[in-house]
Image 1 (cartoon, rainbow, N blue to C red):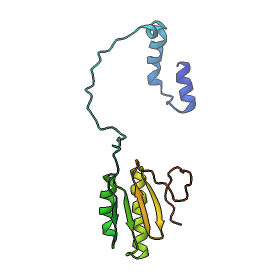
Image 2: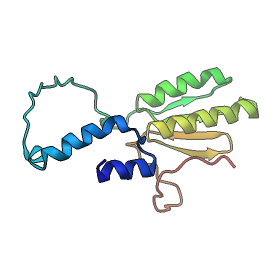
Image 3: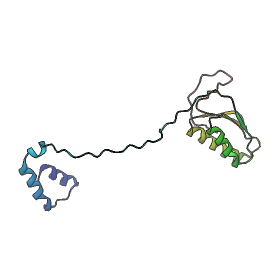
Image 4: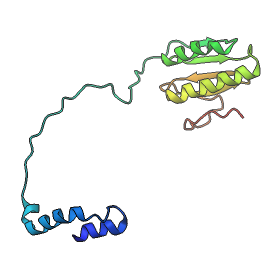
Length: 154
């Protein structure tokens, strides 16, 4: 039994099975010249398939539209998502909704802007601005730009 096989048995990586001892003896008898020989194998080329890039480039255009949406139920989330997905800033006015649905919609919007690398800002208590990645929002106080982070509702 070779030293490698003995170590593998000791570590529990192989069984102490005598059936393989004859293979170890054949390998030891062949000597190091078996290890030095080079074997060439035929290589089959792999056909490359064009795939979509993992990161999409956002086309930066001049902003000429902002969408304002006054949802009354959670079902209006689709309109918010479609507008934001087309790189249009969205003002979401939740004043017509009850608090539980409004919270669900803010959670939806936070996930939406996170997934599309945008930002969400609270304008008033129930009004939020969702801005796409290429739009930078400057606060009224002239505060320095902070890195984008997840929206905290508390």
